[in-house]
Length: 133
Image (cartoon, rainbow, N blue to C red; front, side, top):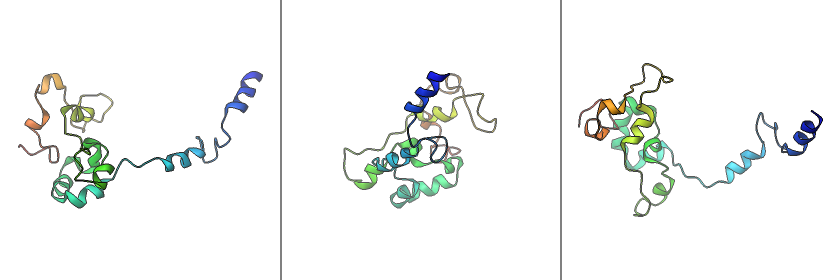
């Protein structure tokens, strides 16, 4: 117990518990990181038609970057061909919709092996999933 107490004293960062159950200096470290996410409002500025579609359907609470990936570089320079947003892939859909007993029953879930072997976007429109393409 004594060796544990000594080790704990020397190994615990000084800022630990400054603001709760984590290092207080972590906030400063996080603030200095380069931004990679632009936010939903930045997407709306150029893609308002898709944004409006999204607001009317089941995925309205999701951030665009949940499926398309970090978009700060795209917002900063949309004409740069090296800065590409993620192309929707069925694995992104399965991240939320693959059957999982820990999810609420109201959340639409599938067993992908039994549902359809092709791409989700063949039958579903991601921005308005209840519509048929």
